[in-house]
Image 1 (spheres, helix red, strand yellow):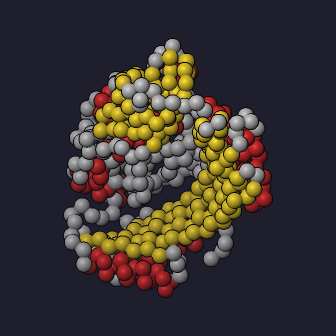
Image 2: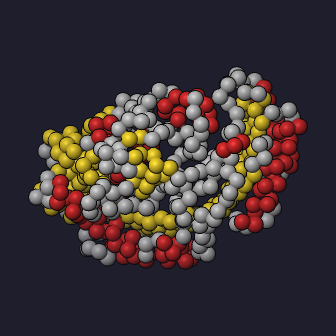
Image 3: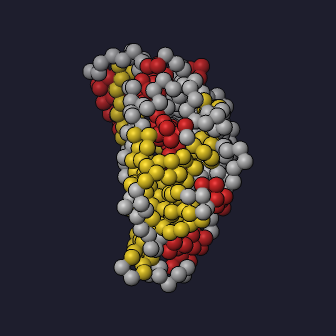
Length: 448
């Protein structure tokens, strides 16, 4: 096969997928699905002006799942040769013949498979060689260190570019492929004043390198954030309102997404069990899934099973419209796939009516905690109990009073969602969940 990783590889990968499906059919499989992918990337890291790492990555993968009735077997390989394909299918079939039957197993409903494939603007190659990437990383770090003389150390600046091709096919006749790129620049800096040392970071990511922040801007923001943390202390223990910065709010909404996944629902492992049709948020909250968003980091025409994706109002006036389902979880729940095998595809969380940016929301909060980073994994997906380490700033009279660290915020996610006060206009677009700052009613803060 050729060395390029671009749209020219799709016909070759389609041939590989078709071959594997044909071998599975000859082996007696009643159904089969195959996924093939190629990817390549370059990443460099510079620390204090010196090159730390230069990594060039090339990967390929081929996986198959076969069904003998409702018995399932899977196997994979990194070798796309005909001999390897035959061996992979043989192993998958052997596994399927020895697994227990599962009435919910099988391919997606043929009527739900994607048939139209508009260009979503996912592929923007970045012709970047290692020397150019190193120079960008150096400029990024240097811009950050120049912000303040107290910035004397660094964990490094990194530049990365990735491009991948994938093809998915199944025995219902679905066969499609696409190409996608992703690029990023990041910087982590350390500030020191006496014995006090603080770190912070910033990054930019996009499908199109033209949409990345300038590298000097990334470094400057990282530097400003690190310096702003100097003098951090623990706040008093008590209760107060909490404002989550957009990059933190994304993870907060991510817990909601995890709770409404089909797997969490049919396993009865969700604090939002059976919540479809119920008010989960205040009545002004609106959330939309937009899988076909141009250049979206989670955009796709089909999900992991070939099911067509569609625009969807996931939360309307605070009420949960339904779950995120692939075929298996849908059958377990007696429902139909929503085209979410593999996750949510660009969730847009609308700002609240009359919303403003973070600074205006701080004035609205008046007194409380502004969280800019969370740590730890203290979230119970079954009960919704929430306890995370946090850093940020204490707010008095709507203004930053002093930086804080070594504290914990705690509550219950179900209550936290219901008691949201506002969502800001400062939307973070660097991921599959797009949301602004979120202002929460009183949470327990454990500090001094």
